[in-house]
Length: 360
Image (tube, rainbow, N blue to C red; front, side, top):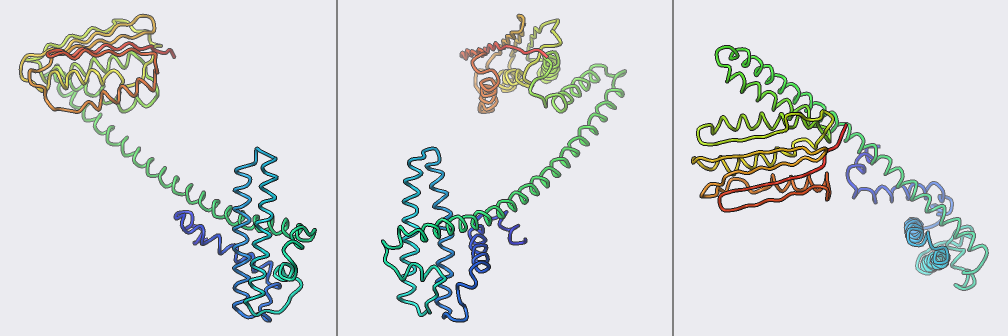
């Protein structure tokens, strides 16, 4: 079983195990025919190798035949006849080589004697030959199939064991990820209560940061989220961004005052475009800048419009991977049901997105 376990991990060991299994089974079933006590060792070894190679030839021959012509009966019949001739020729040729070049005693019960004592055409269409070849082919193919099945079963066991270990590690990582955010949220809550009376603005910032982290960690694991929560997340994000550039940036945001609670959207989809506006329109410059956000709802169609100023000297910050990934997500989630247009001028960047929403 230790060798089977190694085969489950390393595919190059499979042929070794297949040959070992074939050798073992041939020894069990054909021990008497080899006449170990009467024939020289070289003769027995050659006959042994002949039977083992025949196993592989018959198994892979049948496998190729049925994989290619299983849906075409006429060609399967023709291929079967050709396969019969190939197997017969292999038996006939090897039997004559053994009789001619190796020292052995005649044994009327083995396959070497059956093929070596008669002419090629005489045995080719003989009824006894047909029965022998059909029986040997099915039996030998079954031997290889059995060994390969044992290997595959063990490989599946190793794969399941590996997946189990991976799952255990993922569960451990997940538990750790739950512990760390839990600790952080406790700290944020403590900061909120400490600053609520003496510094209300700081307390509000802490609350917004806590809401952002809680949303991204716990509420975006599904394929869709509540539109209202997504819009609240965007509002909190823009409020925090505004704190970093309050003296030099004008931020205007217009969002729907009332949102149908059943409307849903893909999580963290819109925030990519909002982040891009601040990242490339505000952060690279110390001069006055502005960002305008407008989100409108018309029944189940959402329209997002973002316009931001551009600095005189464009920074090399980022390489557009975020927007590229957002495009891929839109294509994957909405196909041709969304509209996205971008106007990139010398001093202004405008983005317009329209997409359908779903209901609970």
